[in-house]
Length: 152
Image 1 (tube, helix red, strand yellow):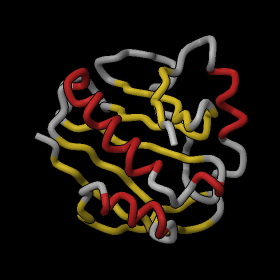
Image 2 (cartoon, rainbow, N blue to C red):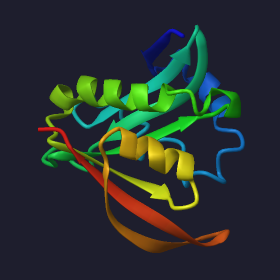
Image 3 (cartoon, rainbow, N blue to C red):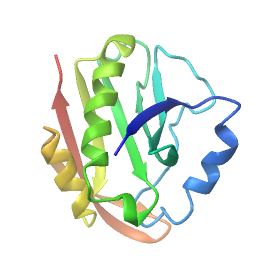
Image 4 (cartoon, rainbow, N blue to C red):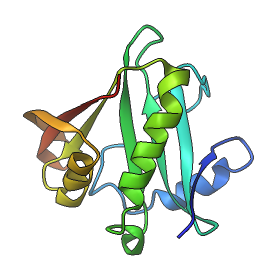
């Protein structure tokens, strides 16, 4: 299996919405908050390409330029691509690639408590659970887990 992280740009961005279909049951958002900025000092955003096929996206995003941490977002759109190590591979790759350009010492994330495959993937990548909380959404209340990984 050949896994590549490909830069998202104006030319290949049109394909992105096709990857997002059906993901609302797993995550609140499928794009970085700063998706329109393309500022490499605050956002690392890539397509996940497996065997020359786009199958998801990963991003690390700083809330502001002075922050020493970034928030991780990731999705793998096809069920058939989940559960075979793609997520853990690209998380570790993306963190290593983004660590210097974003000047970060830790990565944080939020995952729905009922998304056990993602939770176990994050544990495998070295994230530590810090707290759980309830979030109100249009679908009702969901339990969310806040996790952190120190990378310094």
